[in-house]
Image 1 (spheres, rainbow, N blue to C red):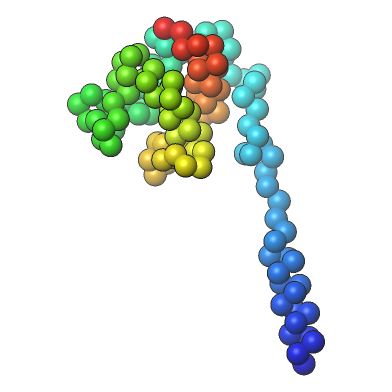
Image 2 (cartoon, one colour; image 1 turned 45 degrees about the horizontal axis):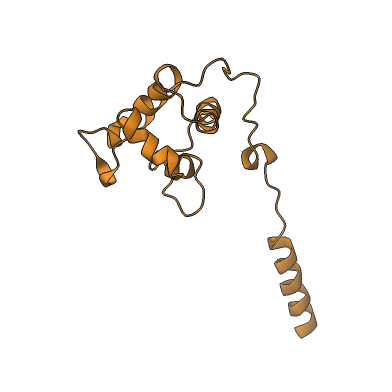
Length: 122
């Protein structure tokens, strides 16, 4: 009886450790063909994304969490120190943003990632 219990416990441990991740969620294709890759300037591409997804809580008038993302100079602070990307990509050690919602759309993440990689063009 003890052997059967041990075998069942051992099997449950092995089966509980098996799972399948969805590769596209773990490693999103930021170079997706459906995303606009013509411009990555702050004014044309990034500001509208931030306004639509962040200003509700992080405009100068709201300033929740003492985080103001309104305007290029303010956003640049968080882009330069890695907090913008860490938060919107839901990396460990960062507060996932937007708060209590899923990640931004893949093309928005792609645009912000490219904007940062290209040196934060205005």
